[in-house]
Length: 115
Length: 115
Image (cartoon, rainbow over all chains, first blue to last red; front, top):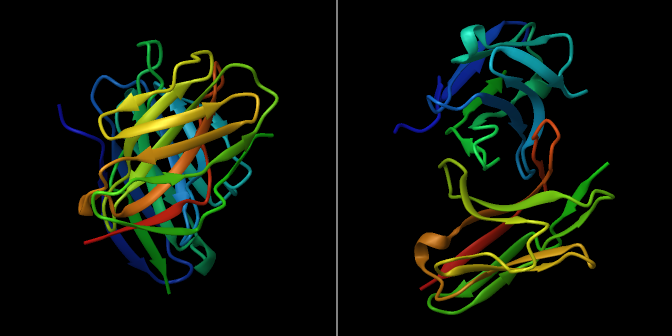
């Protein structure tokens, strides 16, 4: 059983460019979460999916951010027109709803640096 | 809205000794889960221990145990026989039962285990 994987692990981009991150959850997990973690802080919730449906979005998720989870498998998080304030670690987590546990398992994260 | 507070930004402990990390939270919910996650330097976040609020018995996982005081809204983590590999950021997290499942994290405590 492989864990949650994220790609790329690191991304450096220039302000104004678009970036896309991918998350592959644990295979049987039907819930998928995106969090953002800035230096010295705990992760903050961005959005989550139940299968392919995006059910909740945080106010942190501005119009420049979009997330998808086609077919309820992997997910992508896109940031358009990046700003320096978008620099952070983007974490993905997955869990199995209805399996008797709500424990979330995290991926290694994608560290974004916007120059 | 729920909040999680970790009042100790940094702590250190000698190898083989015991250390306790503090966490308090604020919620009006009666059913919820509490977690401690560990984030080693440059590595992914992993679950240390979880506690269901309806369970009076404190959770234990090998050298890790919690002191859950529901009335006081306190959830401390005790690490016994500290090992060098316990050096990490430790995050306390709250999750409402039956909600969308997003975790609310504290700011973390940086634990250093010294030889």
